[in-house]
Length: 77
Image 1 (cartoon, rainbow, N blue to C red):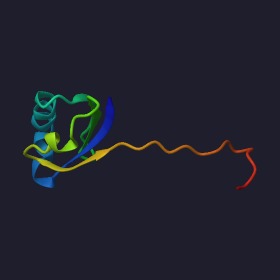
Image 2 (image 1 turned 120 degrees about the vertical axis):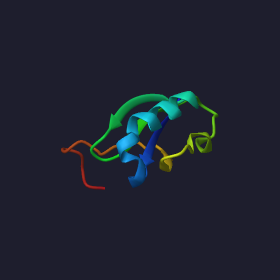
Image 3 (image 1 turned 45 degrees about the vertical axis):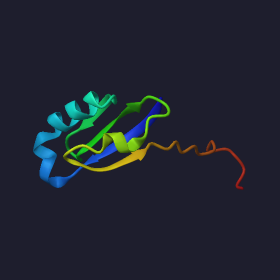
């Protein structure tokens, strides 16, 4: 599964639930709907193009990235 972050455009913030439903229909497993900031996060089966999630109301689709920081007691690099 590929973790994805979908940003909803300003004109569709009131319809966030409908946008999430459209994403589910396209095969996205929706994990969170962050209404305050207009973001929907979830997962898409591996190998499926992110472009499939370009539905009405979507401003951007990005693959979620992981950031790892060294522990606080690690030496400076």
